[in-house]
Length: 316
Image 1 (cartoon, rainbow, N blue to C red):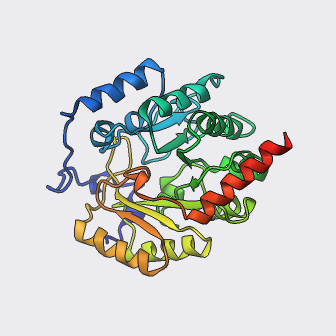
Image 2: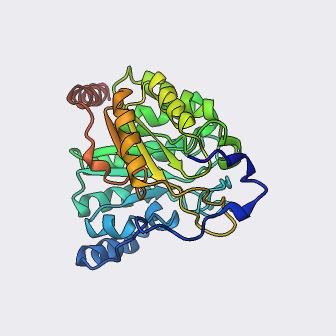
């Protein structure tokens, strides 16, 4: 791993333009791809697959899966790695939760990922909108595993509680990078705050949720810093980890300092598993929601969530 991350802010010439042979994207040939694209268009939904220029969108859509991005496509933050546009967001759409639920139903998804832009313009950061979307998806698809990939809600516990009251099965919040590079890579976000959000989310439901986080590699981080980030996540009881290669969306974004060899990703996966992570997805094209359905929370977690939801229904 390179140690030159401290030069990122000043020296864009560090960028490695030529991609190695293992960074390949297969273009769509499966009719399911066009069916998924048509469905997303028909229901006027936004997907992080397109907005974030995910390299796996061809593959995922060909398999009839997508990660739905709620609360609009304009973010209030300007992270140095992200392709999503930064602008004044539009008002929330009241019927969006039902549209996401309908898409999940039509696609017959057994696992859905719901994410959102950062909405620092809203007092709750969009937490209630997450809550409503989780509830709508569950009402339409009671057997679907619901994963949320959330912003930090500016560490407002009451906002985080709105999300957790809806009882997602998997709570995902990404560190994105190692501690040293966080101020450069992540606008407004804080490394320790992200760890705290992950830990508090789990504590709010007495541990009955799977917590997940991810790192992008190739920004100049050092191997020992990656290992430290793994240790920090485990110390905050995170059990699912994704590791992927950072790819520069445009010349205005942070440069790629290093393309990590696939063998290194394999080694990091084994290291993470040895540190106690229950599930690890690690590879050059891995993203937070890549093959997300390959992980299923523990049975006792699923049963506890189901029991709590039944109890809540009985009280209403």
